[in-house]
Image 1 (cartoon, helix red, strand yellow):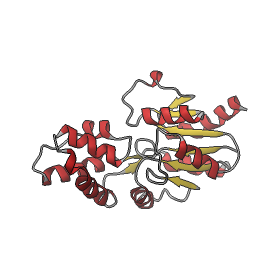
Image 2 (cartoon, rainbow, N blue to C red; image 1 turned 90 degrees about the horizontal axis):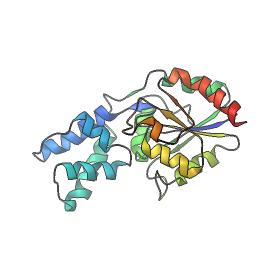
Image 3 (spheres, rainbow, N blue to C red; image 1 turned 180 degrees about the vertical axis):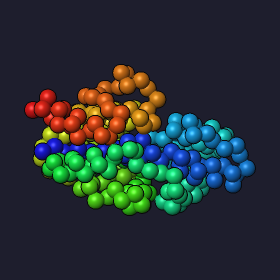
Length: 218
């Protein structure tokens, strides 16, 4: 059986609306123009600190304010969960893969406390044997270290990484791990321009896709 590691935001869950709510609550407090959902999605992918840096740059907030705003952002990150939801058929796909004997993990750039908060809120923790957040190691994606650590913790067997973004594609490529690209997430680059083993647009397709790719890799 395989070891399968997933990204979180834009892969298992659609969290951009809540992230936008958090960002705009801060910008409103600062008396600045709010960001759009498209801007929010454009800023997602490299962790909370990079998100805040991009948000500051877009609204010309001085660098000296970074740590203060990041602290507020991270505090609200753990509690604003009203609009976040799994993508369709995620729960069923994870259950199917677990029953089939595959071992599942998570590797995200979201801070661990916020990661655990949203997984608990959405009842998505149980299928995951291993969870790595953006602050679990000194390195974060696209450095392959957290992804490789997640696979190591899952034991033996073929590896597959499932993600949605340029960061995920680069991480898998640098780790030397086959990559399954979910096309309905937060990617900005055409799928054809990213290294990947296969693409899918609906998690209902994933169990059969995993089986097919494992047969190819065998």
